[in-house]
Image: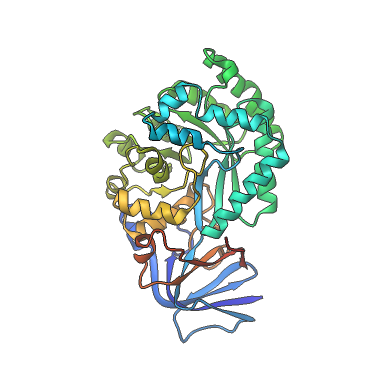
Length: 412
């Protein structure tokens, strides 16, 4: 079936085929067409053009003067978890830092305790509610991490839930093994033994079931060292999992430099980054993925997006949707934070939240831009005066329709 999306006030996020990522000044040139149409055929984008040149179609969908955008590509989420952690939210209000909560045995370990007591079926049910919320907000691709199990059995349980989400949801899903999210309570004071467990037992068990595309490590002060991270990602590579590293959220950890050296697909967070980190990333294939939702929620510094883009880097934006430091999967809000707090333009933020996010999941050949031949994951907004209005009106419910694989999805 041929579906014509017509009468759009603007079509944004247009890119030619064969562009995996936009870097530096290229991000500001992410294509925008004033007034236009998009043709969808068999779940893929078949064309884009100006008024007066509309092709014939079996069905016409009137965009009603709204914008047509690529669906968001959220390359860093932790949406398989049990319950919530609003008690820690109040602890933060009373003055405790993220590190202080973790040092008291809370934070990630509280989510671990809850997850271990929760069945696979219940985890799936809760996660699918979050998936529905994310798709209604306009997300069409997401990377989902494990990391709240911290035992072989429970990490595998999480990854099986992620695999089930990938099979049952129209959202494109990538799975990441994050057994080194923290040291399990039962290994407290025996961190090297825990690293050995991750390498010797967890990674082979995950690989045996083909459950993960990537391996990740929280390489930061109070979590895992550079050498421990290197060992884990090298083990993962031997089992076919490419590295993605949590780096420089809490300190200048060396995780960025390690990520580049080991060919990591992305290094994520980067709130503590300066000239050395930018220099390491320059010219590399590693995508710096910034998570402004965590900075907003935790009151931390924001990653230096402006400096990175001005230095020619191709940054991605992601939600970090998780129960402790960023309990939201609203990528429009992430775009707005990129503009408001990180001095990105609307086009840069859109590129970072779509095409560059897809690149950070190794999906940009199929997703992330309005390009003929790519999967038709599209967002249609209510009428807007310009692309700039989308991050400007940060709380207005502008998303009118979401199409994933060319099929309209339910709203909230």
